[in-house]
Amino acid sequence: MPNPNRTKPQLIQLLHIARNKLQMDEHVYRQNLQAWTGKASSKDMSIPQLEKCLAGMKRLGFKPVFKGKEPAGKPELQQDQLKKLGQVWTQMAAQGLINNPSYLAMERWAVKQSQHLNNGTGIQKLEWMAPIARELIEQLKRWHRRLMLQKLGITRSNASYSQVLAQFQLQFDRNEGA
Image (cartoon, rainbow, N blue to C red; front, side, top):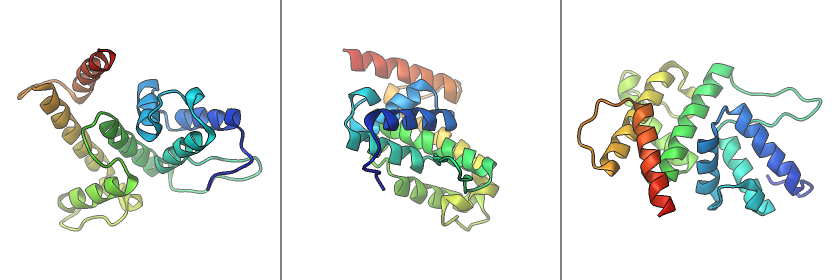
């Protein structure tokens, strides 16, 4: 729920804290901002847009901790896995590779994909994915790689996920600048 007492500088500071806590690199951070508001810089945003970005960061696993309170939440390992899954999903949306960037859409995808990773029983919530998290993240990255290669017009490649991501981003940046 948006806090009406927060100022623009406070919201920008919270976004930067969220970025650091989520261990999000600069490029992914800017793509997330762009996907959520159409603006790649928090300084160019209005307070409602900053609140929208903060809500997006919370969906990716950011939990603001205020003085005097202990952070409540899941075990750190599971939290990191949820963050990674959310970051890849958001990046795919920012690149135009998927149509629905919402947390619910990601959860639906995970439930469907988890069936063959969990002895035929799909997980019902992302928070329950700990036993199959690594495989689920790798599966999402493989799908992301295939979509990027397809959009690049490459039918076969031995390049790693990171290499394809870098190549795709180079092409994506070139097209944005044109």
